[in-house]
Amino acid sequence: MARPDIDTGEVDLARHELVETGRRLITEGLALGTSGNLSVRVGDVIAITPSSIPYVDVTLDDICVMSLEGEQIQGRAKVSSEWPMHSSIYRSTDALAVVHTHSAEVVALSLVKEELPAVHYNIVSLGGAVPVVGYSRFGTNDLADRCEAEMKVHSAVILQNHGAVTRGATLAQAFDRALLLEWLARVYRLSLNYGEPRILSEDELAEVEAEVRRRRYGEATTEVPK
Ligand SMILES: [Zn+2]
Image (cartoon, rainbow, N blue to C red; front, side):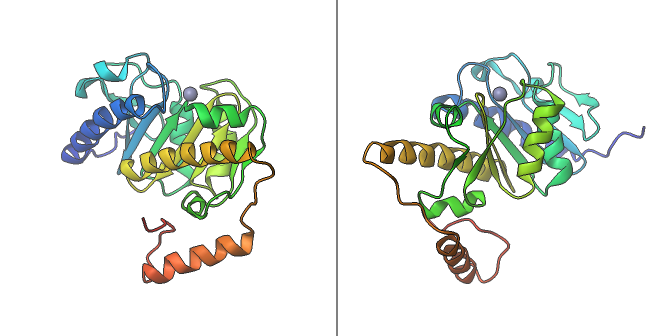
């Protein structure tokens, strides 16, 4: 099979971003130790964090560069065990970055709930209520398939007894969505202490999306203005 062309400059930028953002996974409390993983698509290749190296120790040379078919082209380390999940999202969506977390609020929610409902209008950035996909062991094609099916319509999914996945047009956007998802799960949990939460309706979410579009003059985004 012919090797894909590699834009060396862009791949180097992706390596730097992955090393820096990997450290933020830990400092922002979205993962522990070596858990979670991040990737960026550059043309026909994907740069992804390695398996089993603490984020604080990951160097530029450890970042794995893979073809979409799963051939390791560059990087001295072993590719993340969740490679199948990352690659399936790139094959079936327009994502240019994927973030996988093991953050506490979404994991706790995944043990009990079928979805994270629309507790705040910012959830339109994630494609509305975020589904919890059923349990499959980490690293399996089955988990990748379950995740891929939901990622076609959402930019975030929660993995039962495991964590969460977000996608974006940039690594910064995918990471911000992971932070937003964790915050929304926390808000939902806190609200349950008071009683039955009021959930935004489909019409109310559609109105938010329309207003976001109007303010962005029709840009192809549903990112909510800060
Ligand atoms: Zn995981």
